[in-house]
Length: 386
Image 1 (cartoon, rainbow, N blue to C red):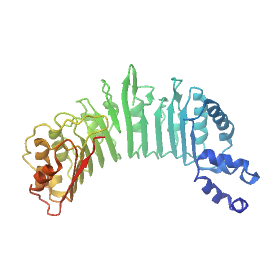
Image 2 (cartoon, rainbow, N blue to C red):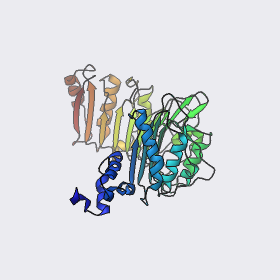
Image 3 (tube, one colour):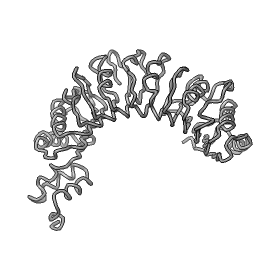
Image 4 (tube, rainbow, N blue to C red):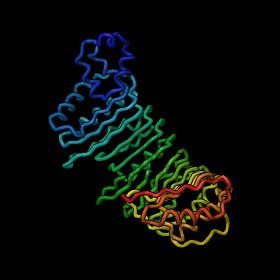
């Protein structure tokens, strides 16, 4: 220990970053040399989940007393995993205010309470933090966005199951994130309270997509939306490079940057939607057909061969993956069509479940089909249903 204690403060802080924050704090009892070192940590994570109530209350008291004494000029990340009805929203709000005063770059809060307790209301100065680049909020949190919002450095925003104080809250927030690249929202409706998951998952019966405006810097989106009238929503995300979608899709949109596309095949008219998406994505490189978690695969519906071949098949598509292939005629025809026209395809990976169709029959049926790409490798995988 004496040899380690002889190292510089900067090096010792780097060593403390390798262990959980709770362990790093415990080193303060070792000696005077270690007493305040943890206060220079640029990354802090406090986890109340799994703590018995007495231990959780001690941790709460520790944060109240010691977080105001933190000395790091920049807090790179501040993560709170909160659980327990004894937690006070006022305490959490104060901790966030303190973290923000240290040029906070990443804030990540998970708040679960059972039985339900008063939700957390975040401080208004969070929404004018110039240094914040990542904001992740999940759970019993109220997002009350003030009129003055400026998040010039925010690139990643993830909001899951949070509550919005007003209908215009989301629009106001997104409009003032000029460099936003990664957006994940969770939209759900419980009574009169709209709670939101871009990753956008929407199973409510109200349409709030008019609140989402064009996001030209968005790189990735995940849509799981059951409603049919989502033109404004689709139009706002046409700049993405990566798209995961389980939604109806109309013609008329152009994804001129889309390179990676994942399409859930659980809903009706999925083959027509698939080819509408392919036509809209002229530089697509990777196509993945799958079923989202908790979505029941239904197979492809009948389809008519397109009158014109999508541009991406002729110029850019390199990878095809189908993770829930059943071997039904409609699915077989789609794979055969892609193999026949994809000039630059390198890999076609087909995965089926053991009970779907005999592997040998699939292999024989598809391997005999013509391929536009002489270098295309056809790979079959058989997955267990367990």
